[in-house]
Length: 376
Image 1 (cartoon, rainbow, N blue to C red):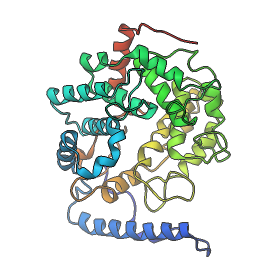
Image 2: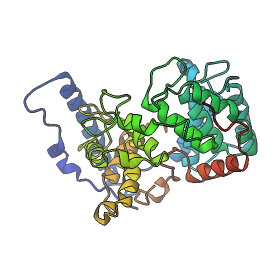
Image 3: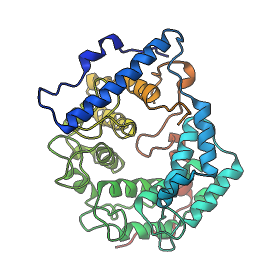
Image 4: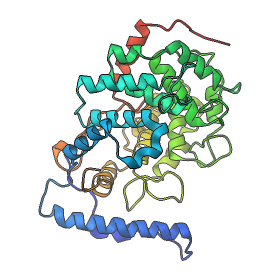
């Protein structure tokens, strides 16, 4: 385990340089940095008394997550179309924290997700809602985390494959829902779903890799669609899709790496999603998960120097998450800061569930192939 690795006495040196041109975004950035400095300095005072800091408040997180799995606060009504996402996020978080719900609760989750499955294939975000690739991805991942025969068998893979065909375009792209716009998130959700449930076919994903590569921008990241701005979530979707298709050689990995490393904020330690934007905790995964994928690509090039390189400051990212993002009420690598109990379970960088959940689901569905194998 590791203690704090950054020198907070020198934190002002890393502050944002607005180059004597004040803009709304530079002002926002300086406001964030001012807040972050106060948090880090307070932490520095506290850690001088308690050497085990920072501490991940696991019990508080677990208590809150388990309560949300059964009864969400009223202000979550606006997320009625994201209920499969909420189940996935909560179960995934509980797995990472190594405290899964009991079997009865997990079975109830399966029953609810079944009600979100559309008769024409795929899953909506709630009961009787239209299917969407995002909520289908969340549902499949949640069922993979549960990992029982009941969970696996609840997926109608024949209609699921038909749904993927209905949102596929002739250029290999995918819309998130019928009649929706083509989006790299849709492509990633489609390939992740297809791979983990064993409904993938070469025909279904013909030209997909080429379309994804057309989304890589001059900056090196990936946009949501060709011609748009590079973004952390889209960059993950792009490189993860190419990895799942085994077509990573098509992208400019050097440009992607250069763009990715420059998204980690010098003072805050966390990642921004786009150039000239503020730090955001969610990009800890979207930007962070791209690095092991990039490392895997570079390993194929047998460049030992790059393979052994750690491309981002892991300690600084952990500090930002635990010290700055962890609410007072609990709202990969063996390198872990603070006390040993801060270590979490591992996550598969391509599917965003535990590696053995991916393995178990894939092998279950290989042993139980779907009735429908392809469609033109």
